[in-house]
Image 1 (cartoon, rainbow, N blue to C red):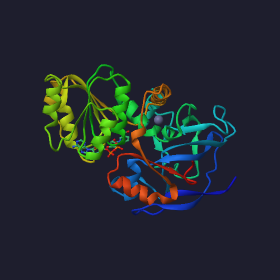
Image 2: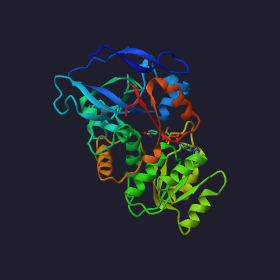
Image 3: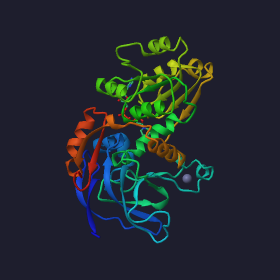
Length: 351
Ligand code: NAD
Ligand code: ZN
């Protein structure tokens, strides 16, 4: 067992990342050490790379990034019984405290003391990552390895889509980044009727079609609300899945929602968003939900069931694959607006 490893780290409070030598994490009695096979880059990693205002307030360098991954258990602490060396796993990277009010209510995804591996402590862009055993998710062998690396954002999509009725419902997905695109596939797999999607980026609109959206609208060129109303007999959609965080998209989404509909909001705006509460929420009798993370572990159970049943085709999402040391190119592609998921391999691309 080596004592050092390669890791993609934020070393300084400034733009950029570096591929460094770091110590292999030592594990406690209730921890698991995972040898990372495949990792995937999230929008949050781009923010940390760019050292935006949010990152400056949250990240304490030096820290290893990475919260989307799968790998093989290398060894386990002496108290760990449910996982063993050799198991193929991913993990819930939001670590809850287990004792706050929400944790006691079974709402660990909104724990008051939540810590995120790969943000608040060393993550999975490395040869090895330390995870509390309770956060490990064993992967069914039927799930392909590249899917295993994106369960974190897929779980965001599953959580949002299944936060209310979906079968037979008309759906609007606002914003077709990776999570919006996954939400389209999940909504379709779960029996939604017409799925509308709005997206300003042309390549991402094309991806939305590939993922199964029925009607894809560019809100910059078309009156998206009028189009959706027209296609729903003047009623509006049953369900809004807000996946952009963009104020204009959020407002349009609410206007396109039918009276009595459900708005599930996952996208994170960087500013406050004015809403017409009277007309778009109160008089509509709308149900509005904030969605954070993945339910522990109900979302993981649902996601696994969908994947095992072969109900989700996520292939259009996968693009470049790169050794982790070539991370600069991958980050540049994503910063350029590529919507797909880029997979990274800490010890080179495997066949
Ligand atoms: P992303 O930034 O890749 O996707 C957002 C998409 O919205 C982009 O494709 C963008 O072109 C599109 N968009 C921008 N303005 C638009 C408009 N006016 N109309 C329609 N589309 C518009 O992000 P992602 O990784 O797919 O994540 C989606 C959102 O969810 C982000 O805001 C992210 O911060 C947030 N997020 C939330 C959670 C959570 O737990 N709540 C977890 C992960 C990500
Ligand atoms: Zn808690």
